[in-house]
Figure 1 (cartoon, one colour):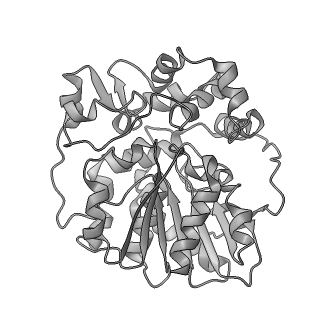
Figure 2 (tube, one colour):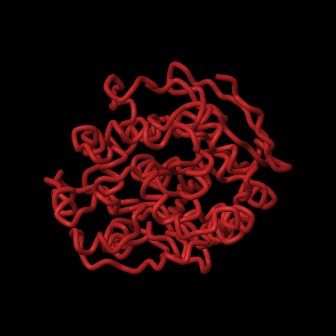
Length: 367
């Protein structure tokens, strides 16, 4: 399918970097100049490199070469296993492959070190793994919306949270995203409308977001989270979003959303319509299937050794979706510089409050 042209803000360019046979053909966005220190920005789900469009020029103005790739399984990056649910080799999305992707990309750009690696949402998972594996490459680390809980000393049998939630008529979104049904549910007609609802409900614009710490990893506590995290048992994600959007005035939601206009949202809708969601969903399959995480066990018990900060929005449930993890970061990071909560921001911090996101990136680099 043809790739539609994307209008980028002034100061941002895009290009394709083919690193075959070592890794992928990466689509990256770029700002600044190649002789400047490198900052690398990693997006989450269901996003793209485009999600950093508001942050990149601000960082470049401070004297940095800033890149943001479409990650493995996303957007215009190619070379990953794009077979369907039943046939894909999930080892292609293993933790060490995610690390290799970024290391290879950095070297292909002529760098051996990255001044700061920033990850948002699932990008924070990849960024944390990079910092654990290669502290000699990644000098500073900013994790947004998804705190790092550490790599276990030994693999532990997981609590069967799905069975516990099912007894309450609920289910966890990560395990739902790991099912064969998820891609079909998310794809198809009305994609723009669905994404508008999904982005809205996880933002500070939705009045239903009042996140707070949860007491424990059990069904009763997790069920306090909104339906986009803890879904009704028989629903897909589209149905979950529709239930909460039923009380919203959809045209007003779109017209009042200054941080994600309809034209900007259309970039996401067209990319997901072109590719489907399975590439991004494969990350969830690996995370919820212990068999595919075995390669990360070579780092069992290893801590993040570079300076690290956690930043999230005041209205972001991502901070608390795993109880106690933010508090644990001082134990799994040897140089943890604290958690910063940005007022009037939800889950999409780099888009909702780019100036604040950039402020904390620069704060870590400069201190």
